Length: 109
Image 1 (cartoon, helix red, strand yellow):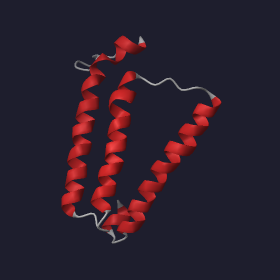
Image 2 (cartoon, one colour):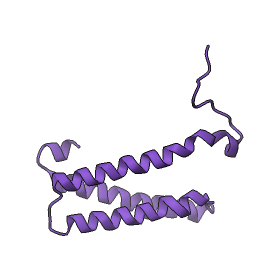
Image 3 (cartoon, one colour):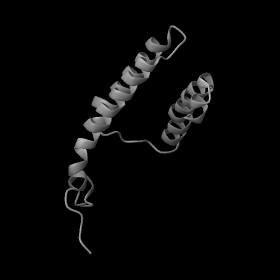
Image 4 (spheres, one colour):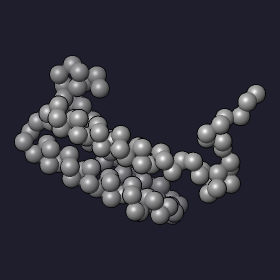
């Protein structure tokens, strides 16, 4: 954020892209090479397709060499929509993991 605010947009985009590439290829690859990683159905049906679509959208928006304020607003709104979609499934955390958490009504102490 600081780089973008201070006029170093290319540095900000490069930092974000580089971090995501390293997380995907190096960290996830190394982890899977050490121990097979089970994927939840939501990851296959929602998370991975959204990740691919997001990368393609970013590529399309950046094709002209500029990410405009409108482009940023589109990305932000889609991020909010994704977060709401994924966050909506948080209510049943305890049923899958065996660890029950009262999401709507926190325990009173």
